[in-house]
Length: 303
Image (cartoon, rainbow, N blue to C red):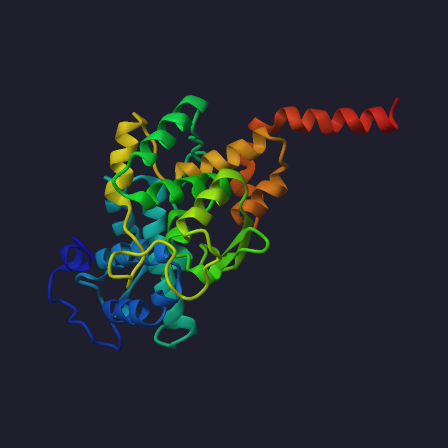
């Protein structure tokens, strides 16, 4: 753990490998065997978190909740509660695998570690003026794929990793929809694409219904998905968007759906949430729709 176990308990006091497997060994096995099966976004996030946890790590048998809490609080000094909780979730996944799958650990100390309370979910979405500026900026980008990715992101609510991980075989040309196989909740999700977003995807495909294992948005050598970070940051700056991340395009989709009259259940289905808890943040945007539903019910049954 960075400034981790060694710093808290004295470097060299408990050599790795004593009393069985170490936390570092468990992390490396998890990164090697389990992490490649997760989505690209999850892989990137977990990889950084697990690098932090592994340095100076003790034997699994010596790991205590009190030690994890010490590092949780140390992280909280310079990271948000939500970020700290993601670090905890990454370590928890490793310890669960060590306990349930590999039998390296009798019980996980994470059972006694509480996540930090998080503030209410962020809702930052594009205003009409911001959306126009952003779409103009991505159209002018030096990276031609960026405009297609952003249009699809707004039209579908898909995460950046889901979009960049698309292969041509994931495009259902007949039904005009995308199939996301590697999602955050590990369940396949199908999302329809309509209007300008679909037109741009068709143009990107060269006007033909392409199929096969190739990436929809590949790097130049075709071996990996495209990295759009630099192009996105340039477009965001050109559009003069303040306090706005790529993930906020997903919030924009949900907000637009709510303002268009979609129910929370429908929004959750489009975004791929298993429960309504994550989409309740958009409830205030659908108040007019809710009032209309009640008004129709009263008119039909109570008048």
